[in-house]
Amino acid sequence: MNQSSIPVLDDGERQPIDLLRVPGLGRLFRWQYARPVLQAPLLILSGVMILHGLFGPSLAPKNLATSVTWVHFRGILVLVLLGAGNFFCLACPFMLVRQAARRIFRPRWSWPRALRNKWLSVALFAGILYIYELFDLWASPWWTAWLILSYFFAVLVVDGFFKHASFCKFVCPIGQFNFVASTLSPFEIKVRSQDVCTSCHTKDCIRGRREPVSDLVTIRGCELALFQPRKVGNMDCTFCLDCVHACPHDNVGILSRPPGSELLSDSLRSGIGYLSRRKDLTALALVFTFGALLNAFGMVSPVYAVEIWLGRILRVKHEAPVLGVIFAVFLVAEPVLLLGLAGWLTCTWGRVQRGLLPLIVRYSYGLVPLGFGMWLAHYSFHFLTGLYTIVPVTQSALLSLGWPVLGQPRWMLTGLPSSVVLIVEIGFLVLGLAGSLAVTYGLAEEDSAERPMRTFIPWAGVCALLWMASMWLMFQPMEMRAVLISG
Image 1 (cartoon, rainbow, N blue to C red):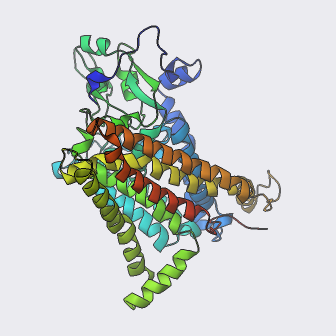
Image 2: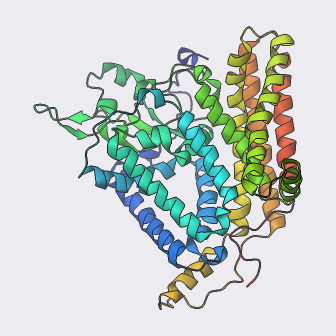
């Protein structure tokens, strides 16, 4: 699908919703101090979580660090990504600290050319999933607090030495998760009219708005090298709104679009290139998808039997090598086997005129909706079953400081019944399956217009297998992590 093939809406067609045109909301987002105002509460909350994690109760369900991080933050994050877009990156507290530090220390270097890809962030993403299980982060307020502190330290080091938004684009694991998930969000930052951009000579959206005489930048442009007229979708976009503020023609909005539509397009993208040529982005998408099943597998009871069995075979007692084998199976062996088989069948049976590896790279993005469905099902389980736990944990924290303003902790407050939450989980998984089938069929139609079903069926089989595995996981007994079963 070429950019030129996308129809232009005329006056008789339905116009997209623009959040910047919504009264009140648009005024907030256009305000130059909107981002720090949104970041400040999360920065304060991060500080409270760090202090409570280091010096508060060691029992995870009674500590703000573990309760907020592993129950509430993750659940709210995926729901906002599903319902709106990458608004967490907009309100990211790490960037507020980074901006304050840059008033004192100016970065001098550009990010190394060899690292201008996603391979480092893919490794860090997988590494976070690994240490989460190895150190039982969900059960350790102390380790959780240090993880948050490490994030702040990493931001200051990377963006203290390197220009632009190097940490966001090339390092941050949370950001990469958000980038992939936001390909399915219903809103994106996009130009309203290409004609206005064509007539613009200053290109402030990426260069920044400058003083006419001194050429000093007064409002910065996009730090992630996304030139708005050629930007496609949400990949690498932090919703920072710098382009909105920099555009002198008020031509950038937060526009609605069909979720997942950017996964069907392989047009040239500013700051990214072609998705079908980005093996690093494919690896990120696969870690996102298969990591969703892996992360959920770590909280169901069969994982312990598997770990014991592997420990006997490997003749080791430490969990690290056992987890290493499980991660290698989920994140390497399983994708290679399933995608390799589907790609081979597509080449031979569907007779698609692509090489095996380019074909696998192209269709891997079709699995993203299924992976996001699994993340939604998993995180919504913890969030909804522990929905009210923030109340007694906050009461307990204030009481420990001698401020009983909210009364005694009501530990009987937990969340919604598991039977109700299960319906929500199944709904997310069905939604994810439908999205993956729609994307892979769209790609099959484009690659083989005369016989799309032959191209589609192998990838539909992969989607069906992953969906059945996801359903099986959701019906297993799950740990109520960072949530008290009773008072």
